[in-house]
Length: 285
Ligand code: PAF
Image: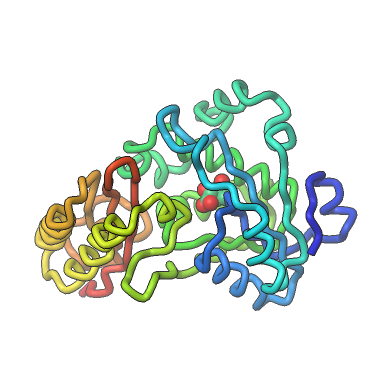
């Protein structure tokens, strides 16, 4: 497995057209499942690790975000990754970080699809976040030139952003395929996340409130009932709800019923840690 810092090396190593798994490191089995899915196409696999400063708000966890490069490489090597791409901030943002932050927040330079502007979910709770994601992912695609890129449904709103972004700019991204991959959970239901490392053992129990809320909502016959059941379950676990909603699975906009595919989406706080989860509501009728 190659460790690549200079993007020119990726192209020289004939890794263009790869199966690409962009990450911020602190890898877990959820990331492992993306790599396994990427392996199915038989293309060389490139995994990027870059803790992207432009997608963190000023009061968020950029500085303390876990950086575990050795363990990350130990997880990737046996999975058959051809290369780990470790770009520097200078490689990703040659214009300088302050200018990049500005570009991320400027819709004329980093246009965001409606799905990342209108739902008033992550877009409202983390202003500037999706601009930073769109900027870095677009640039990673430019540098790596993959034929397919793999994203977890754990970050469902991010996935919809990337799908729309690529679809809206085929001139830039060519035939790139964005491949959604299912959320991987611990046996108790907790969705795997790099941020779970922040949780103390007693908080891990409380964090189960998210997956339990999704489970109880699943059988609800009405949208309002599902949303109330989710909020009640989060409350009962001492979680502070940011949102717990049922939305159209494609547009992420509010729905009145289950006529079309819908998705339940939750963000909640447990002390200083912010957790998200989501699941399809399979009962559309
Ligand atoms: O999902 C993530 O880990 C990040 O948001 C991504 C897609 C690697 C962009 O920094």
